[in-house]
Image (cartoon, rainbow, N blue to C red; front, side):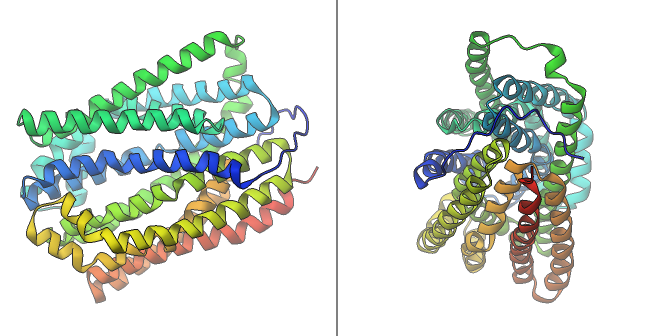
Length: 447
């Protein structure tokens, strides 16, 4: 049974292209800075020209992404719940949602710090990589996990701003994170000669810097607003609903990152060279998702706001407009990837063998945007509406299809089979959610 917050009144509002673009453009820019954290790390290490060192960083980044992407519910869950409170005009509930997410983020982050050695050991065992990759992977994981509380708090903060439609603030924070990461990672790794440790420490310090900046903004804002009681903040029904939504999203996120993890693991089983090449090419998928992420965020914020306001027309208009813009932008992304793909590969790594292998499989990466656009957009719609159970179930279905395809096609076609399986995974996610949405709309706006 879904938790229903008090409806403060029907607040109908129009949805226009201008509204969609006002959120999508800054959030596309902000989203494009997100993979810059990993891309900068990869680029810095890639300049050493050592495939094993580059592979060790990539393997460590995979472990790190699996862990922290599993906590992405702190951002997406907060975005949907804050957007719905915003649609109802309930300012106190907006703040309460953030405070609940903040507490969960802080506790979870500290727990990850305590278990860092165990997480690193499990990661080494599961990746089953060559010994030359193990040492840099272990070092990178241990250093990056120190920033766990800051990373998770940043998720919660970003969710709050996105839920309110304040894309400009979110953009500034993401620029701060990327800028600090570029400066610190380059300085520590290259100029001080710390190598992969410098990359890890640079990214860690950038995450902490961003957390401090976001807390300064929020403390000033909350002090100027009305007081909120602990009873309201930690209301049992609201907490239970948030944890229910968060649990579903966490399972969904775990399956998503698990698919990425299995894809990279199977790459490592083929060869170190194939793993390194796929570690380069996977950035095309990340860029595709982030390039389209602005319209997914617009779907999440405006869709959640429409749910909170009880405005079915606004919801359907949000779905139509964000889908149209997303499809158009996916085509643009593929053209850009095709035109500049080899240059981007060359910028990431100087290892000639890795570059040649990545260029050979580049066509698979070029078309990740069209394959994934519906999945990205539908995820935004379902996140904003907090239809978490359906999203979880469709991800489990898609993940099952992916695993079957991965092992079947990978055994027959090698790396071509791995990429084909990932495209099937993207398509299954989008189509399954679209089919479910039609049924959900019929019941969501019933009085």
